[in-house]
Length: 394
Ligand SMILES: C[S@@+](CC[C@H](N)C(=O)[O-])C[C@H]1O[C@@H](n2cnc3c(N)ncnc32)[C@H](O)[C@@H]1O
Image 1 (cartoon, rainbow, N blue to C red):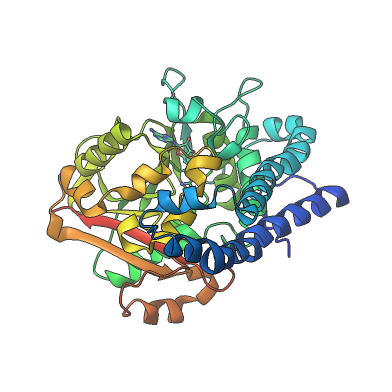
Image 2: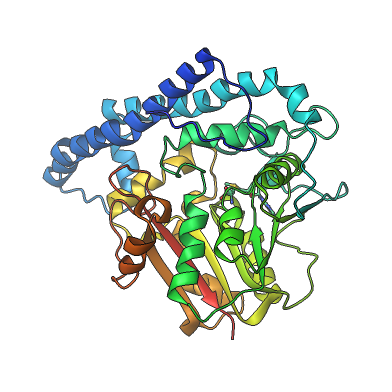
């Protein structure tokens, strides 16, 4: 079940015990997200929904469903196992990272690749990063315990592998591969030269852009130094040139009209609404006319059935993702038009996973309609579909 996929120069040696603990937590995550969530749904359909209908009470909103389940054992069990599994993800990888702290921080960065790292020690870190442990990761993305510390990046890289139980692909880059190859295949005349990834963390989903568009220059920004240090060292070791820069995406230091593509993945839902609006205005400003904003995100509430919306909102209440629910409530098209994009230039798609299905099947799936279902935005071995939305700039 456990997929060890760290074939790069920042990989750390794992003991038999590390592997066993990781395999256990991966299985537990998979179990709670599939079997236990199916049990919860069954309980809701067969008991809670029925009882409420009998009492003449309609469960119309995700909040109604949440309230109706608060005292139900299957919901309590699901929530407590899922919370414990989330905490265990970081617990089991942190031991190995701590043991390898010196070797990680002292590891020389490969210099035969032309990627760069530019940090800004004066950058003020936003509260959405420093104010709480984002998705229960101790120290989130930014904590440093010694000068030049990159271990928060190592924890992220190792933990995402356990967290996703194989669903992000062997190189943990399926989201970036899917979204980059969508642009490459669906708009084959488009030839981007300058690509920007915002909120890149360690660059898992940045690197596929450099692979899909080998002639382009790829830049990736994040506010947190440790993940950028790690991401730079990792990319260099893989021989994939990326310019990593420490910068706030809601206040970028780039010139107007510098990029053909502005990309992000799993980023917008971690921004407070004010910063999100500022980021989208910045994205519009730094895009060239004819360029595209393109981001992988949670599917919007208005596209999903009410139960799925309740299910996806779980993280808002129990996983330190306070902006999740409010983000999904918005109309994405309107969000982009408020930032300057023409409503008619809005694009969205639900896509099969590129690294799982391969080039040919992916290409043929692009002609299909844009369908939302219970696999959209969920991690499921049955065939997750990633949701992307964005807009072309005129
Ligand atoms: C969930 S992670 C993104 C994951 C990454 N894009 C990927 O696909 O692997 C969110 C990232 O956004 C960064 N971040 C949060 N607020 C930011 C801001 N205002 N500007 C730039 N980066 C920010 C965090 O430091 C964190 O690394």
